[in-house]
Image (cartoon, rainbow, N blue to C red; front, top):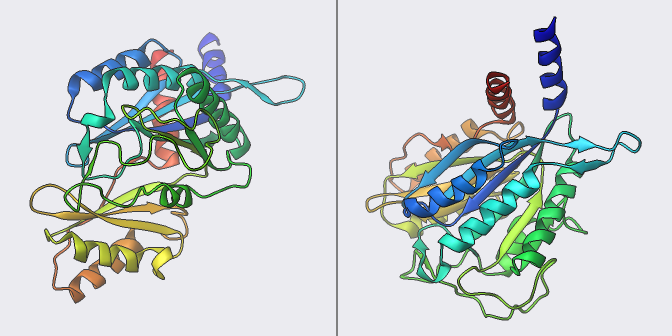
Amino acid sequence: MENMKVKKNITNEQSMLLCCKLYISESRNLAALDSIERAAALHRETVILDKFEDRAYNRVRYTLVSYVIHDSTTDSPIYSPLQQTVLAMVEAAYQAINLEQHSGAHPRLGVVDHICFHPLGREKLEEAAWLAKLVAGDIGNQLQVPVFLYEAAHPTGKALDAIRRDLGYFRPNYMGSQWAGWALPEVLNENPDEGPTQVHRARGIVIIGASPWVRTFNVPIMSTDVSITRRIARKVSARGGGLPTVQAMGLVHGEDSTEIACNLLEPNRVGADRVQHQIDLLAAEEGLDVEKGYFTDYSPEMTLETYTKLVSTNQ
């Protein structure tokens, strides 16, 4: 009977969850990653479900999940361990990484480049936006880093790619295909949603938002000519007249290949198979071979299942 009660409590708790995907501009400095993970380990009610590292991009993504407590009267969210966990990891990242000394093949605007919150279980997008705005306030006010909000966390729902485009995110600033150091003015031309307009060159800025689940799907292209890969990426992307709800960019990936990195904004509408097929066709027109693409993250169902197993085991 006692075991049944514990399992029931676990199930109830896990039905009200938020997921955070935290992207940090580093994957080669293992000591820096270790310090970030030690900061997270101090907050035991948040689980790191997944860590995806890419040395060529010099970028890492942590997938974090924890519960949300709601006010019993209003049913409004009032607390999630994710808030303090994310802040601790961000602070550790700023202490361990200097953006001025960072370079990689993936665009970025800061040491902590992107933080996105997604609802899981019975949680709603509004709860994810609530937490995104809390974390943005913490980073902007306590750590004095400019923060730009997007989608459900933004007052007008501004899109992530629109903010990035305004800030020059997609323009390489080093040797035609790489990003290095801080490339924007030290005083921003537009006010961030949180934090100062003055940018610390060692930290950069951070973009934080809340959105429905986005899948990231990358397709290797067997060519070192990134201009061709970018041309294919434009034709795949919705913005270039390609597949709806797909964002794509062509990037250098290692010494002997390039890659098309895709965001599937509505993966149940336009999924990886359709994206792969379209890239195969476009690459064939260019006389290029393509490898099978791969997801860099979990589906929401797999995320929920993995979290459930981990928490049940710990209980």
